[in-house]
Structures are given as structure tokens and as C-alpha cells.
Image (cartoon, rainbow, N blue to C red; front, side, top):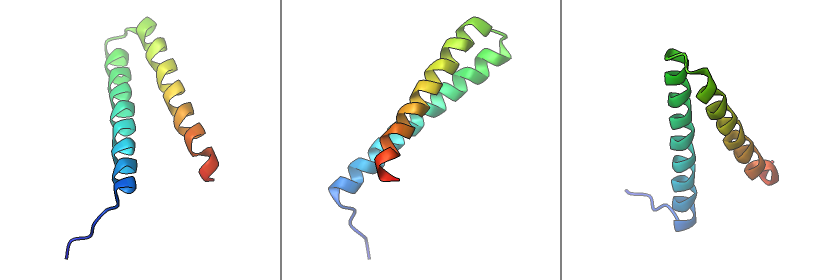
Length: 64
């Protein structure tokens, strides 16, 4: 028996996966910059990640 996922839930899952892939990419960039001792671009990537996480937090504020 295959369960059908409503379209609105499919879109929600798609959005979550997109956001998580973007966050993972930022974390991978931060790792590489740390390993390569590239501290100037590291600050920019960390700030970008902070903004992305803040956006996630704000997007769920109404859900809490």
C-alpha cells in the first residue's frame, strides 16, 4: 500500500530539502576555508551561514 503525499506537503518537503542542501554547502565551505587557513573569506561564509540560519528561525516563528 503506497501512501499519497498531498501536493502541499510535497512542496514543504522540497523546500526543506533545498534549505538543508544550502546549509550543508555552507558548512562544507567553512570546513574547507578552515582547513586552508583562508580566514578572510571564512568570515564572509560564517556571516552568510548566520543569515541563513536566522532566516530559518524566522520562518518557523509563527509555527511555534
